[in-house]
Image: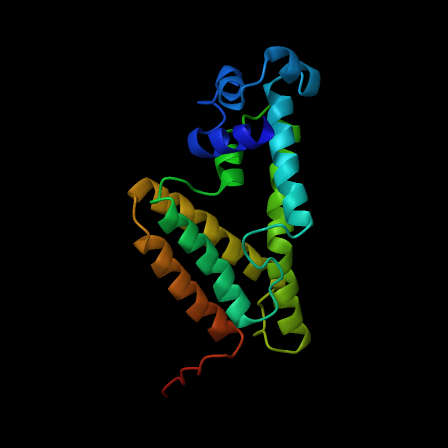
Amino acid sequence: MVKVAFDLFHRQGIHATSVDQVLEASQTGKSQFYYYFKNKEGLIHAVLEAIYERLKTHQTPYKSKIESWPDLEGWFNHFLKFQQVTNCERSCPVGTIGGDLENGQQLLRQDARLIFDLMSRSLVDFFQQLKGRNQLRAGCEPQALADFCFTVMQGGLLVGKVRRETAPFENSVHHAMQYLKHVTGNLPQRTLRK
């Protein structure tokens, strides 16, 4: 049920997916559903928990530990390829679920936030390494740079889904990498003319 619910939530969102659709697609009954999940929120929690566990145990289709510039580019490229493979019909599953959550669903929002925090942890660690080697310009903080990368990825997936094309995401990644290399001194600085 969790695997089927994940796919349906990812494709349609949580509001457009009914418990009956999950039961039909997973060929399970209501008694099983209520035994394991009690209600739809319980199922959503189980899906988010499964995603969190996969990330925590590094069972991802991309290299989750970012240790170099090629790793960071590979991280972005994984999401670009995902967008291409799905013909821009899907964005981030956690972003899709999280975007559907209502104000009263604070525990589910917390689940989604924990996943986002875990996904961006390696980004923070990478930029922290650069800072430790004095390779970040003044005012550039690892958490802020990680937030920037994560937001470029999430926004790129969403805009690509809406526009049904990968160009906005590709352009954003290109400019993001140029900016990041500039603030770490990996691109030549422009000199100001007097």
